[in-house]
Image (cartoon, rainbow, N blue to C red; front, top):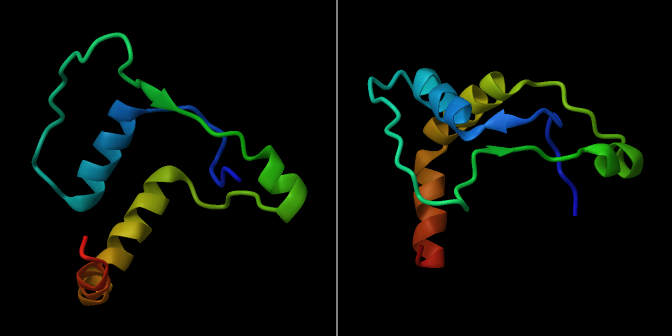
Length: 88
């Protein structure tokens, strides 16, 4: 199991803002307290991926989100076909 990320702690609120900005959305983030177990940030240690696979990130999160959104847009029909086959 590998974390293939930057190793930089990212707040969920920051990630949501990046996704909205990258997509050109005019929506805003609405916050709701869900108790003590609500995840506020994520960080993965990519050290094992670096040691075993030689992986080091070269793309930051905003650029990666933008590239993912572009790929999903260009491959929308293929994604829908896969979902249909998997009954998702």
